[in-house]
Image (cartoon, rainbow, N blue to C red; front, side):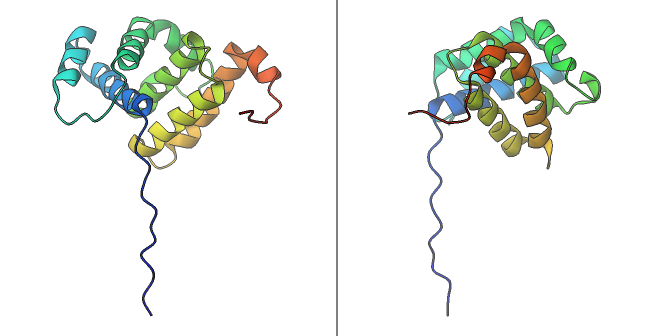
Length: 158
């Protein structure tokens, strides 16, 4: 007897998720090369086969994180059990994106921010990097979105 071929097709990525992936690529590149943010953005936009993405959101993430990286690093560092230099470039980049969204995009629910960061870490990071990212961003959320977390009953209202 053969097994039925019933694998579910993966849903297409949202344009915002793809924008986060591209921003992750840019921040990762910046972390390793210290290239100029405009040069990095231009290079990423020039690539072929990038898929569907939200160009405006990508720019906001990449430029926002790189412009505010010192503040974001300070916020993230308070919740680490190691130094920033000891983080993998992927974990570092994902944490900065997550912290940036938590601080500068209050219109995005914190659960969405954390979930998207965890998915990036699962896709691009090490084996258990997503657990680390989740734990750190939970702590950042409690710090920067205390009102939202405090009023959250745990139920998702649609």
